[in-house]
Image (cartoon, rainbow, N blue to C red; front, top):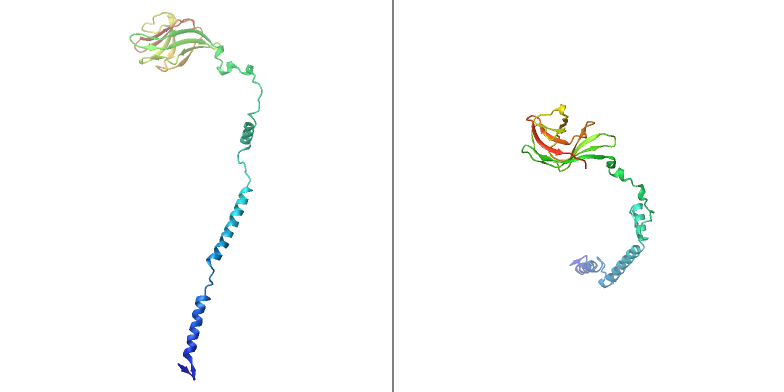
Length: 215
């Protein structure tokens, strides 16, 4: 092709060749893989070396309480400090026993059934430190259930069908439970009664009896 007497075709071919050459060789700079790889490995090694140095210089911080630290220190030093001798005379055995050493057991007896009923366990009359009297049943005390049971103290071995104050019978009160330990407060002057009873008041029946004797 010719324009104004010049050959335009050759000029166009030369320009396309230059553009193609620029797109291939100048558009994206090519970095050889062999050169880039050593540089990356060197950078990674420098980072790991820095982390290792920081880890070696780390300090240990004890977050435990101060009391626990002192205890561990004492154990490491061969045990806890010697607290000194213990004075055994400062322990009051009477306080640990609730003052039971000042009580006096006056009489003791074993329960047995009456009138076809069954009963077992122990009963005792105790004088307290202040002089009061108590009637106590043991933990293994048990008696058959009856309506209206009451506790009675008597002078004789037989109660009969009724409670008679004239002959010295003492109505202590209603039986609280047909089994287990229990305590009843007694009036003064009845600690000499040699028999304690479980009595069915509505029907006048002797249910159980415990003869009381000095221990």
